[in-house]
Amino acid sequence: VGAMRDSKVIQVFELLELFLYRKAACIIPVTHSFKKVLVNRGIDANKIHVVTNGVDVSRYSPQIKDKKLISRFQLQDKFVVGYIGTHGMAHALETILKAAKLLSVKNDNDSIHFVLLGNGAKKVELMRLAEEMQLDNVTFFDSVLKDEVVRYWSLLDVSIIHLKRTPLFQSVIPSKLFESMGMGIPVLCGVEGESAEIVNRDKVGLTFIPEDETDLINKLTTLQTNTDLYQQFSNNCLAMAHVYDRTELANKMLNVLESINAENLTNHRLKKKIVEIDERLKVNLK
Image 1 (cartoon, rainbow, N blue to C red):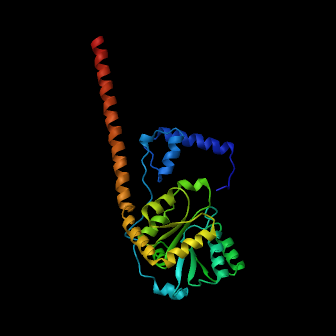
Image 2: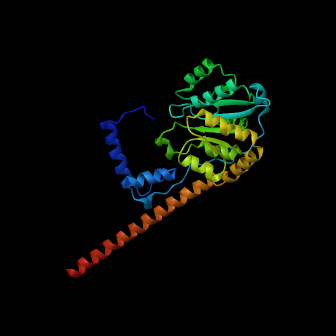
Image 3: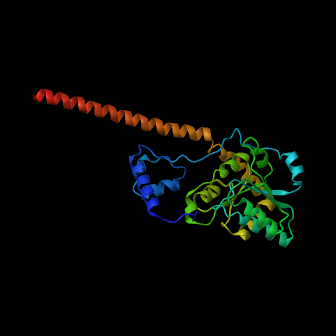
């Protein structure tokens, strides 16, 4: 994320990293992009098996908006757009604040309200910026316990996923994408690469240009006003959540590990047999 520069220490760790990749019997990355990177770095593609992140559908499922939270934060009759996750250097969440300011200046849509839940290195700075911008259409929530977070997810009409616009993040898939699917909440995805491909392919929301608040607002307005499209995305979210069910993904990983174990066991037996034959040959030669 630009926090460190290249150095001899990092180069040594990279050599160790590649050594471990080469020696590993199996590598399981969480994106297909990561697999491509590894193959391009000379790692055998046959031992790389992609198992993506997913969602616990027993926890993240469609919920009626939590009435107590709606009342507490005065979100009645609001179209709630939310970001739930880390407020860090990589996330460029000031883009959301700029979008909120655009709506505030236009003053033609006061029904949209932004909420941000979580903590991170940029949280205090973002709250200070929101205050300087005099945003009354943004609410910050402190982090909550895991058992409570679904209540806050229930408030959202749309979920924002966002990272800086850099090639570094074209190979990542934020896990909140799958949680949005589980909740049946359409996505506004400001992450290029594989994340955007999933959103467009599975038709679970709209993509916008990262760090472009104008494009964010345009796509957000589309989701708010086009109710048929919104419902289609919501239905698709629930359908695709089962594809990314963590139980199914755990079974997939287990199958990979079992096949690797079986292959290694077969190789071990084969080597043992070769040793036995070799010993017999030596005896016969004597």
